[in-house]
Amino acid sequence: MSLFWLSVGFGLVTASVLSIASIGLSLQFGITNYVNFAYGDFMALGAFFTYVFNNQVLHFNIWIAMVIGSLLVGAFAVIVNRYLLGPFARRFQTTHYVLIVTFGLSLVMLNLIYSIWGADVRFYSMPIASALSIGPLRLTVTQLVVIGIAALMIGSIHLVLQRTRLGKSMRAMSDNTTLAMTSGIDTKRITTLTWFLSGSMAGLAGTVLGISEGNLTPASGELFLFVIFAAVILGGIGSIYGAMGGAIIIGLATEISAAFIDPAYKLDIAFIALIITLLIRPNGLIARPGTA
Amino acid sequence: MLYYVFTLVFFLFDYFILAMGLNIQYGATGILNFAYIGFVAVGAYMTGVAGMPSNITGQHYILGLGLPFPLNTLFGGLSAMAMAVIVALITLRRLRTDYLAIVLISLSLVLYDFCNNFVPLFNGADGLYNVPAPLTKALGLNVNSFIVVFACVTGVVALILWFVMARVTNAPLGRSLRAIRDDSTVAGALGKDVFRMQLKSMLIGSFYAGIGGGLLIQFGGSFNPTAWLPGETFVVFAVLIVGGAGNNIGMFVGALLVETLLIHLPAFLPEIPGHPGLIEYIDSALVGIVLMVMLWTRPQGIVPERVRRAVTFGVPDRPEIDARELGSAEVLGAPVAAATEGAK
Image 1 (cartoon, rainbow over the protein chains, first blue to last red):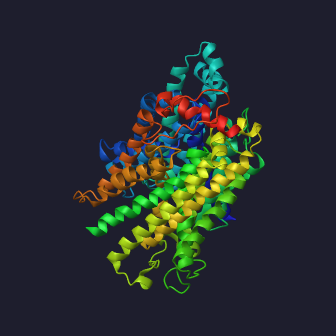
Image 2: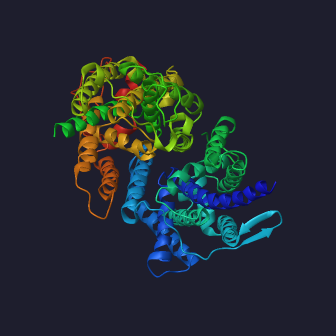
Image 3: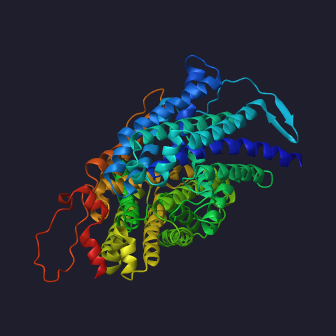
């Protein structure tokens, strides 16, 4: 039984990382209507930006470095949209081309990260966390902070979407871009802001993934990508609340399964969940209008 | 020297085969198969285990049939096709382009993760090695002459497969596939069974992937999971886009430029001291950049798809138009000629 509760604890941490990542991916998909296959590498970039501020220059505290690293990825995402993906999406009617471009961007980013930081496994410098018992769960302080960050992000994204002008504009664009534009919403500005948010979330998720795994490598974001996809599709692609729900289900499912099967295959559980979703409810838990 | 030249020749022809397979899936039918390298891997592994005897110590793998050369490769090709049937049945009927791409790239990653961890299947992260080199005993070849002979064998296989592919793409099947690519709803309304056609295209393409993979493992003698990360799929896409999607000859040009010149030639450069692998990383990044520049400046590729004209009814023949004069959006979006062709 203790093994079960231990894996529930890990599941909550994975679900936290996953929900941050899934929200970022969903936000961007809802607005631009194409998937960013380089998202895993945005995560890796965030993890390494944080690493730079944490270990290589200035030696900030890990959490301060994390904020700087995430915002830098946000800025990077805005540049990528302005000069690369935006022009491609506007020029070609079919989404094939922009999908191939994001796939290519993933390869370029991954290899640039390898060229700069090398293939070594790296570690953040952070204090060794002590474990706390909360009810049946046993979590370290670091893990609690990770869960707290995710809860904070979920809460604030919810408030932004429901209460602010930006959030309302984003939801309007996600429903119908043309209608939003004719209603006087500055779609270009919203798109830029969404990319900034999406990039920052990716950077944050990448760093948090590195913190919770205990190490970071350039490829860790890429392999995590299909788990994010599983969460996003389970929730209903483009739906922010679906992404949150999907992330929690997939996060718990992968970690709890590790208590029963060889942990090496725990991520494959996410893929099985993805396939089952596609067979039973291809539009996800919270379906958007239109078919898959 | 001869060794290097024929290594390049081998990769040229092997990627010609791989690109033709992806070309019928993406270039002709419009299926964005981001799991392509997964099918190549299945072909390679199955060729390996079909060719290896069952009693090699130190490696764990299934089957071990000990089949001789052409049969094991054929087995690999058929295995890739079998996998394509499963994948197509689950995904093709249900999903539109971008969902399909997500599922396929996830499939590619999960296959990688699974084969990397599950040792009894294909020896896990170590992969298969000491795969028997074909024809060496029969022809009495040494290491160097094997490279030469096998590169030539691959060339012959590539030419045969090219001949078959040219027939397929010019046949009514090829026309139907292009009609589906241009507008699957219209093709369906005209009585084409869209799913069946896409399935056929997936099967043919996967067979080519399997054969290409089978030749790859026998040439190198080994194959492990790092050889088929999703980035490798991208290389085949780069060959296809640079060469010209939808054109079989373009695949040869693409393989020559991307695979041979851009990827394998820099591998002969000396390492920069203190930076292991740096040249390889920069080279891979360069492939991505070349593809983006190509997609922007010349999306139809170096050898553009021929604009096929349907038999005209009472309309006088116009001179052949070059695809690039039509402007990119029309060429990419919906060549009218191909759509009407499908309607015939």
